Each structure stands twice: as C-alpha cells, then as structure tokens.
Amino acid sequence: MGSLGVESWNHAPHVVVAPNALSGHSIPFLQFARRLANEGVVTTIVATDRHVLELRSSLGATDWTAQGVPLRILGLRDGKAELTHREWTEKMREREVELEVVRLMQELVVDVSSPMAQLLRGVEPAAAPVCVLHDMFVPWAQEVADRLGIEKHLLFVSNASALSLALQSTNPQFAEGLLPISKENRDLIISDIPGLPPIPALELPDPFLVAGLFDWMQIRHKKFRKADVILVNTFYELEKPVLDALQNEVLGHPNMQAKCILEIGPLLPESYVNDDGNFDITTNGSMEETDPCILWLNTRPPKSVLFVSFGSGATHPAPQLLEMAFGLEDSGCSFLWIVRPPGTPGMSATSENPGSVTEFLPPGFEERIMDRGMCYSGWAPQMRILKHSAVGGFLSHCGWNSSLETVCAGVPILAWPKGAEQHLNRRYLVDTSKLAIELEADPYTKEELEGDKVRPEPFYSREEIAKKVRNLMHEAEGQAVRKNIQRLRSAAREAGALGGSSRRNFEAYIRLLHNYGNCNGEGNGHSGGHTNGHSVLIK
Image (cartoon, rainbow, N blue to C red; front, side, top):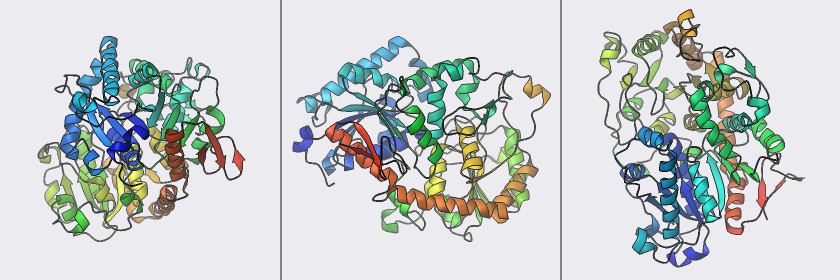
C-alpha cells in the first residue's frame, strides 16, 4: 500500500503499540510497527521517556508522517528519563507506580484520538484505537485496553516453544509442586508442554528456576491467556509441532481468551531475508565502508570465519574468557570475536566502545592470532556480518533474534546459551530442528551443586571449544547442520513471500484490524484454526 494521507487517518484502523525497552524486544516490535504502517494502519508507539530518547538517537526520528507513513513514537511524559531500563523495571513492581503509568498511557491514547492531538501531543489526530499491541513485559498495557474498551493483542517476540511453556506454566495441574524448579528436583525431565519433547528441568528459562522471579513472571504469563490475539515471531516450517499443538491443544481452552495465535515471523527486514549476497545497508552500496568488522571480513576467504557473539547484554567471567580464547586459538580456525570485559552493561548501537579487553586475554594472544582472528569490543553490525560471504559459522548464545538472523543467513550454529529462554532455544535448535551443534559444559562440581543457584554458571573447557569449532567449520557434523539450515533459510523466505504462511497470517491480521471480525481458520481445505500451513482468513 502506498502512503496514507493525513485526511484519511480517521477512516483507517489505529493501533497503539507498547514495546519493551530491551533491544531484543524493541527491534522486532519496530519492524512489525513499520509493516503495519506500510499497510495503512495508523501506528502510535508508546514508550517511556528514556526509551524515546534512545529510539530518537538510534533511528534519527520519532515521526514519519511527513513521508506519508502513519507511524510515530510518543513518550509517556513519565518524567523519569534518567532511569535505566533496570531501574524502571524495579519501579514498575510498585503498584502505585504501575497505576500512574496506566493513567499516563490512557491519557496519551485519548489525546492522540482527539481533534486537538496536534496541540496536545504534537501529532496528527487519529481514530480511536482498535487495540493495544503489547510486549510480554508490558502487561499493564492490558489494563489500559480494558479501560478504553478495546482489544488486547500480544506480540510475543520470542518463539512458539517459549510461548507454549509460558501458557502451560499457568496450568495448576502442570505447575503445582513442580514449578519453580529447585535444587531438589532439578534432575527431573519435564513433559506435557504442548508440542515439545520432554525437557530436562535445567533447560527451562531463568524465571522457572528462581522462586521470586517465577512469581513475577507468572503474573505476565497469566496475562498472555487474557490477550484477544497472540502474534508470534516465528514461521511455520521452523516450529511446526509447537504451532500445531498450540492450535489443537491450547486455543479454545476455557481459560484461554485468544481467538487466534498467528505466526508472523521472521520479523526481520525483507531485504535481509531475501538477499543472497552480502547484506548491505548503505545507499546502494555507494558509501565507503568504515566498519572495522566488515573491513576485516573483506580480507577473508568464503565460509572461512567463525563469528563469535553473545548478544548485546551477555558477558563472561574472566576465567571463561581466558578459556574461550585458548579454545578459539587451538581450533586453528579463523574467527571474528565480539568480546566484552566481564560485568560491563548491555550495549546498543549508540553505546560507547567499552575499551580494550587485552587484560582479560592470554598474554600475546592477539599477536598470535592476528593472521586469522580479530577481537572487537564495540557494537558490531550482526546482520551484515552473518550475511558476509566470509562467515561460515556462528558461535551464539541462542537468543531468538540471533537465531532467526542466522537461519535467514543460512549460517550453522554452535550453541552456547547464557540466560533468559536461551537454554530452551538451544535444546530446540540442537535436538528438534537440527540447526546447531551443542557445546557440552564441564560437569558441575560438588561445591557448585551445593551453592545458591539451581543452575550454576556452566564452564566450557578449551578442549571442548576447540573440538566443536572444528566440527562446525570443517567436519561432517557441521556439513549436516549447514544443509539443514539452508533448507530452513529457503522456508523462511517462502513464509514471508506472497502466499507464504507468515504473509497470509499478516494479511489476515490486517483484515482483522480493518474489519474487526472473528478468527475463522481456513487452510488447505480444513476448517477451524490455522491447520497445515496456518492460514487464517478473517471474514
């Protein structure tokens, strides 16, 4: 759809989007918001004052209406722009603070739907919103929707496996006496999660292993069941058994309010998903290359480099950094290692380089590997790196965004999860979809098992690292994984192409916003739900 004139805004559906400030959440939210706006849906993103400042810094703008795209980002006017994301999250645990934020968001929504929107908020007025589309960590947005009498839509930016576990965890028959996992039952194998094989208890996400965090997260999981629509950042071929189970076993349950669960991923730029060469975000490739990672990769042979990165937030203790350095060196393989000092805060594209990491590496390491390796501690353009012809493998923490990016790049994975739901992702990528090789940690010591943590920090030896790097990059096991991920790369493209499963679901969602009907599934001759390809048609 082309640009939408301001004079048409009152006749177009209006969606209020409430993302979380974590980059792993806000990036796919922004991607989806752009897709909505490009289809003529007036899209108002509501964020904390601090998050708006960060978005303006990284995006260069917070309003695209002058270009005919009905997309704008507005702050809550919470007066807390000085708070970090962690501090904001802690404040939101207080009910009086949460109620104030609900009031601020409700006030904002009323203002932008008023003819006086330009005066009140500096934006063009829009029709009353049809729904609030919120992140899993923004459950208070549902209260705003209830007050406004509109629907609550959840955009789940992780995968269907994590969603299935989250929904099942609110089932008393499943959770009572089992969750959260404790030291006494951490050797259990967890069954009865729709669509998933039995899972070792220690593979569950972090909140399932910490009592206080589990209680906090359960509040959010229960809100998932109250959403009217759930959108998931995955595609059918990648998670067929889980998506089928959600359709057949979860939808329609008495305490499940959602009328449909739609996979609409991968939420990545179309140019990235469909590009066969080096993904280039410069203007027609005409700008001079300045990124040090890309410049170094340009000197390497095709498929020769292992990319090593653990996302924007994770770091390693100093002893593990040393062991990783020795393992990478001993592997004999070329590598690009995005390495950060222990305990440094999370990074974004606007963060300052944390500085030299030489003191945390073995003496003389950088000199010894300079002919085949590069260590870099700044912000790295991960999507461009994964699409570079020199990259032949990815040592990854298995964050979901990174997993989708590497699938769409066709680069095989060496799995090293750090936290959140990454252990669950690792298990699915290794055992079910066969897209990754697993690094095996040293056995826990008696002291670690008797310590405070249900899941102690694993330690990976240099021998294991070197062996598995060689497996991935040069041996038959790596070739098998590479073949599988190439097949899923093609499936990701097909899912987003005209007539593909994710494209059909997105089109169905747009029709839902326009017509506000019910979800009536019609797929390949079947009725009810989105079966065998997950096509949902909104009538």
